[in-house]
Structure formats: structure tokens, C-alpha cells
Amino acid sequence: MIRALVAFKRRCPWAWNQVECANGMLFRLRYRRMNATAASVLDKVDVAGCRFSLLEKEDLPALEALLAAQPESNLTWFHPHAFDRKTLERLYRNPAFLMMKVNAPDGTMVGYFFLRCFFIGRAFAGLLVDRAWQDKGIGTAIWASCAGICARTGLRMQATISTDNKPSMASCRKGTDFRELQTLEDHYLAVECKQKE
Image (cartoon, rainbow, N blue to C red):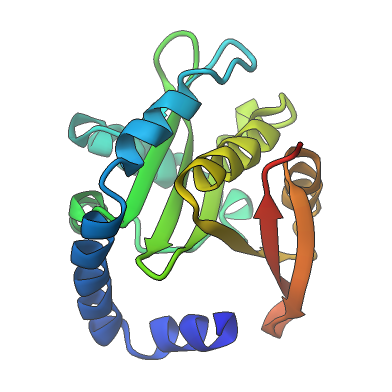
């Protein structure tokens, strides 16, 4: 299933956008309290003095700037969607694409993460932490937060991670109960993540 979704998204982006739109409408009907649940989970996160919260519409320029400021080496394994404003606005409007942020104590956005959800009860996680803020436990806290949100909403959390992306593999293992599902192309693994007991 994961392999088929990834292939469909890459080969038919125009059709994928239509599927995302329909999925968003169905997801909103089934998971009405998703945002409130996520906000409750994120409000309890305390790491490196940072604030974890839902992304707001007025945060989109800061998100675009964060993504544009990353060196290519920090984006090697992070291309879940295009980074232009039009794409970010489209994703923000989709109730099945839960966008979240990490702000430093001074208010600067230093992390972006999301759950791409499906009305059939699955969610795929993705995350990016600004290079200057890596190795502070933020990635681990993001993985744990996503797993907590999914546990409280009844979603099965999955992700694809490159085996070459050692930091992400390590933080995923540390932040969640992690299980490999299958090997994908280009050294990627499909994984399932559950909230740690």
C-alpha cells in the first residue's frame, strides 16, 4: 500500500491533488476533533525552551522562509511537497494535512512537521528541524508528539525514512515504538510508529 501511494503521488501529481481534496473532506467528517486533540498534545511538550503548536495561516511566510533557508544537505531526505507559497496555502486549507511548528524562545520558527492523514485511519509523518537547532532533542519530541496525537485520535502512524538518514532514524526510535514494515526503493524503509508506553 505504501509503495503504491508513493508511486501514485510521484507519477500523477495532478490526480494526487484531487485525491487529497476528496480525502480532506471525508477526513473532516470522521475526525472532527483532530486540531483540538493535536493542540492539547503539543501544549505539553517542553524541550530546549521551544514552543510546539499548530501552524496558523499567518505562519506561512515564516514557514516558506524556513524551508528556503535550509542548505540542500538538510533537505536531502525531506521533499514531501513543494515549498512554494501556493502549495503551502493549499496544504494548509486541507483538514487532512495537519501542519505544526516549533518556535525558539525568541519566536523564530526552527522546526516544521506534519501528519498527512487519510480518512481510512492512517497518518504519515514528516519533519524538518533547522540545522542550528538539531541535536537538542527536538526531532525526538516531534516523533513522540506525532505518535501521541495519532494514539489519541485512533490513527495508525506511519512514515518513510531513508536508512542513510541516521539522525531521523535515531530520533524516531527514541521517540516512538518503531517497527519496520517494508523496504522501499532508494534505501527507504516504511515504518509504523506507536506512542511509547
